[in-house]
Length: 117
Image (tube, rainbow, N blue to C red; front, side, top):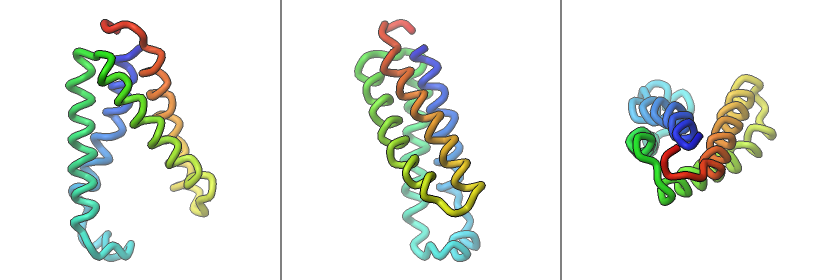
């Protein structure tokens, strides 16, 4: 169960990090994001976190278990209010789905009790 939490988290964080890192400049101008370094830095950090999750999925332990649970639950707690207040239907729905998957992965990480999941 603990490995599933890592894999679910990595499946979300790695693509998001790569999309943010390779964010096209014409799309950033369309969205009004002038400092392109901010999404690239965020993308690099999220991609590194996804890679760490994949590596930790092969040998999960209690230290990384609580780290992935805390990160996923905090991300879900941040995204849920934004998704519920959102005006665009597709974006709000996607944010709600991502936050639900992150919340489930966080709970799985908390419930995965043994070192060898």
